Image (cartoon, rainbow, N blue to C red; front, top):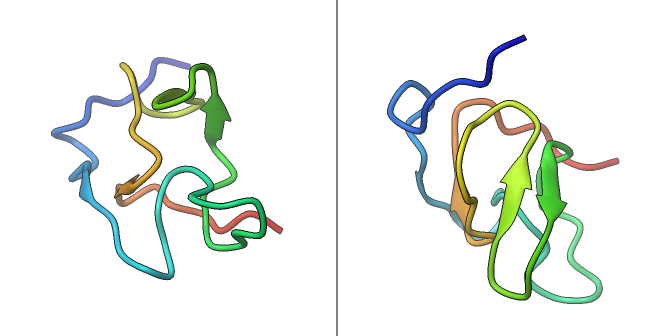
Length: 64
């Protein structure tokens, strides 16, 4: 399956209770699609390109 573009998913600044990656050690409000790859960025299983932990998109699904 091809990944979606950031434009297709409204990739933009996240908010306190939903964002791409963990912002602290005890963070429970990040997305299950996020994969940390470097200290300040990561990748996504459904959106192409580098992903910032404090961003969000329409494909957000909270980690469980």
